[in-house]
Image (cartoon, rainbow, N blue to C red; front, side):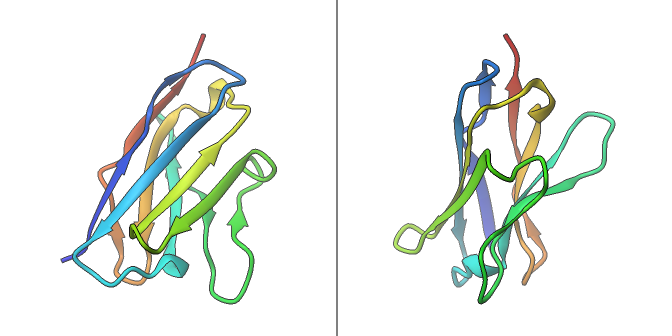
Length: 113
């Protein structure tokens, strides 16, 4: 059974950067079926960034130009580099494997001074 474990969340000041990691285990690593989502308090879960087969990663409008999704085949991990963070980026960030419909437990990112 696939397991996704996120890490790297925490408290960060506005304008600073944070890097999230997602470790995949229990299944074949298929980064092209993976992405990052987030859910802020009182809001629906939304796409942040995702890999797609045969093309460049897809980013939501708020993430384009500030966030970057990456992968490491050797470590079976994907990453989300977040730059120029804003208070409105505060949310729980989830790793998602859409081929299997799997979600991680999420990691809290709080952007505040």
